[in-house]
Image (cartoon, rainbow, N blue to C red):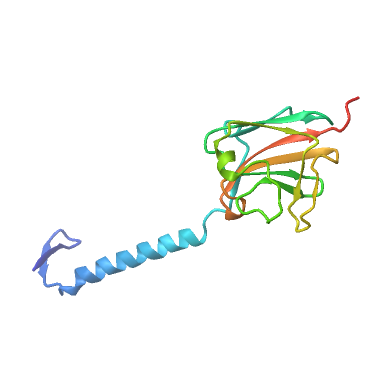
Length: 170
């Protein structure tokens, strides 16, 4: 027998079927499962952050002949790209599964360990649009975004910094 309270403060003793507690536990477990499934199904989209502790670019204004210096913090990732924002052209400098003939700056394992990296404005890389042709990255005036990630195509996000390419020095 189980004793229960009434609204008027009196106590009732009534029999509850043995399956009542089992049903309650199962219902709670099902609710928890459905809630966790809905949270996973609506997981946050990839997040890209500007965090100088993980990735910083210097100088912020680049000219032809300059060298872009990247400072890389702990757990900065295994992959590196540069995107020319004016036309969306993305150049992969380090990637986990490159096309067969792609030349990279270094392997992803090597990149994961470096703390700094220098990239001359004359660097050439493969444009990530299927053309698989090496070309100079810094060819147009404007903003360039340097990105690092554990895996670019994983939707995990990563970190970025931006520089302005101003062309020839005046």
